[in-house]
Image (cartoon, rainbow, N blue to C red; front, side, top):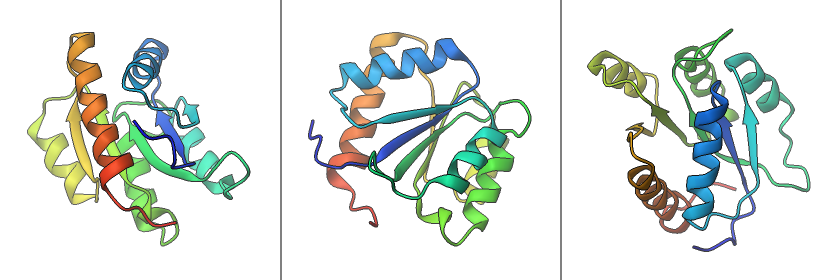
Length: 143
């Protein structure tokens, strides 16, 4: 895994265990990017409002949970994709939801990918490896 892209991976996840699991999967997948964690949609929007590409790096991708307090992932997704500056940031929904309505609605709002979290850790690591290879090594993202 290449660590040549100096952007921040922003994880919006209210469950600390799921956040720690994602961090461990990123580590296992060889992802070396800086990660910032927010616990709800309001914190996410506040962070993005102050993200000015400082020395750590600019937000390059958002891993978004749908079900969060204060402002859920659907509301945050809608806000981000309506903002001409923020809408370029790729957003990957990482959720336990299997609901077809969540999948359809997320794509209607402009999500880039919708991934249901696998139950087993080794399967989750495989998903994160594929996700990171695709988004960090293959895809060309705007600077």
